[in-house]
Length: 328
Image (cartoon, rainbow, N blue to C red; front, side, top):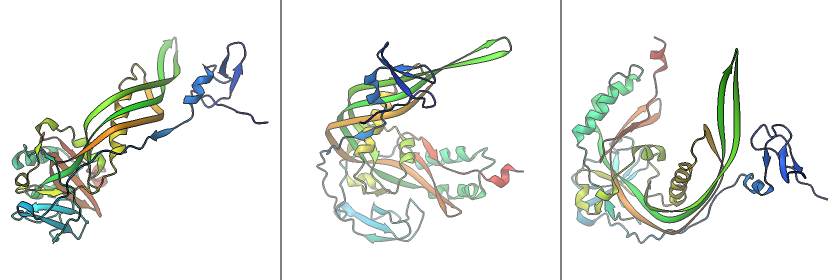
């Protein structure tokens, strides 16, 4: 004989017992009750059905229109640039990058040209450094390197698809009141479910393994309506990374579906995801290049990246605080 046991998802995991009177499962610890059907939602599940995104991207010939390919021996980056662009790696700053051939590279279909000038990007960095008293000296010295920032085109995939999502959340409402000398806090727990279909167009996801996903996401949004058909002339004076990560579909769909569904869970004090199921279909992927001003600084063997969106001027960076200065 087999038995099944269930624990309450809303308190400390108290045992649930079936009540013949109410026809529900009741928690012996907190008193919450649940419909038996709700137990299907209580088993954590994280999945996204596999989808093959249609991708008719052409192969890129680095010999066309005076383009050259380069390989950085220091960090392994594979880059493209015109023949007149100085060859210094925008990711690690190494001056030792060698001519190379990119095999089977993906040719971008769209590109957003730079709108933010070098002077405007420099001012963004300089304004950021102002007043940062705990900034390590190596970053203060980086002010002298601001003129060395690089124009870089980051490879992106623009994903479009239909999606269906089934998301379950744990939510709480907290109410606090004062009664005499006592402060009384009551917390109500909820199991919230959201299901729905949606259509996504041109979800941008970076296709470079050299770029940190959090950094590129923090540079967004881009105005994709300003994208033009790719032409090599746009790359004049800039370097371009090539797409070496084509397994981005799952991240693209999950990221968009998660936020869309979460935006519908309102009027709670706290919300945390319990389980998910996302199904995507009729997908397509378009390769594109998006503009970034990039500067890197190395501290204690770790590379820190400072970047400015080349279209909007939005700045993002990850810099540490100097602990010694904080003690002064």
